[in-house]
Length: 350
Image (cartoon, rainbow, N blue to C red; front, side, top):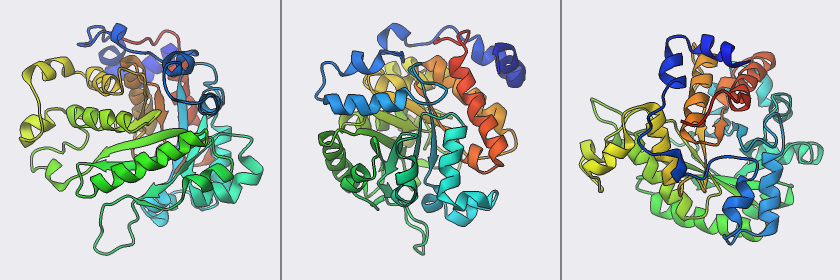
């Protein structure tokens, strides 16, 4: 897919997203993705040579190898959203090997999944594509449902099956967030000691964040602060939902905010995402946005999300359901379309 194809696919959104050139925060303030990004941002940090080598394995794999950008296939939804609901659209993906095959044939930099799925396939595939083991999850079999990330696996298990990184989720804002912050901080410290990278799903979660008028779980200001907390506890890469609104602190009347802050956040999706990037220690922790749920216009939505992320200074997409809830062929098409945005030199950082 070339620039012209991307323009046509975006249709009436093309000029709005591709032509945006007045961001509130100048890109010169950011450590932008590049082939040298790991060496540039880590040379003064406590990250060991082995951590950097393992992160480079992710950045140097797949169709985006050497570009500084990432396309990752995440499949933990069998726990997070129930296996039945997740894999009924394509039952092939009940089989862990099919997930790895999609990641490889889809040209991704890495596959992120549960300990069970990656352990089941590690002897055959851990040397063929970088593994990121998700070590905690929110399971939905408890009745009534609860929302709490609990440990399903250990960092040592991830290390022993050959993973190059571990992933975890924290529900910032939830009643259990203090415990999750402590657990994940300790796990990330151990991962770094063992030479592995760390990826944090920095999600907000609190019933009060959703009102009758608006859902603020993906507000730019709240997600930006979640990113900052994730960077603080040692994430090398942050996964965050694409912002869909703003003014969470102001409208919900909690936390700290200012008019000056909201002037910097702006009102364009690229500005909102740039706020996420600058909260990732000014881009020195990489931002990858979620691909989102599968729907009716997945190809267009995936490409639009990739354009917003790239032009904001983000590092890529981590897209799962849009890819695996389809045939293998159509899933690969989605993943390749996302990657084409990052390979297209005409699409630049705003």
